[in-house]
Image (cartoon, rainbow, N blue to C red; front, side, top):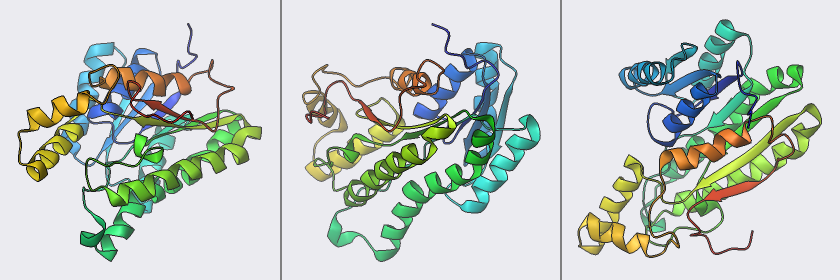
Length: 266
């Protein structure tokens, strides 16, 4: 299948590692012009070199900065537009809130969680939609979490359980507004994907339960019908398909990639 991504400009936030990196790799394989972003310049540069070497695609640039701030997003998009003149695809992907229960969360941490998850999408969308509207084509995809459909119970992730559904609501609203311009807006919800983040969660749960992280991981797998965690590439393949030309009639949806873990019908 021709995904129609050759020479499309794909901005992938949080792509120096994990699921974002896997998505960037696939975009590069498909011939897109890819923007690697992350907080650490060294990690970003390393990922750019790795993807170039692996794919033979030299149309890759790296931008280091804080994409949870308005200034950080504006600066990053300005650099992309200076380089390639537009942004066709924007993937929102930032680190999630820390594990905490309601009684231990400070007021500032509530604001921080909202800033990380919701305002990042607001800032990025605001910067890229003028170019997408002009082109009458665009893809906005948010990497969220299955907690947007089914709140976490294993860990006290109260801030995540609150702000994750807010992002899904924002994306649904944007889908209504932007559909007439040929812009699709979708959310992809990872379940247990083999990243450093999930290992961190396993360590946190192990500490709470007083067991080893290996025991926690085995217990988690039992809740997944496929009885294993997913790979970053398996997850990111769905992200890249939603960014493709064949997915032009898919918008306003939240798709979980979780091995069947979420029990809801929709």
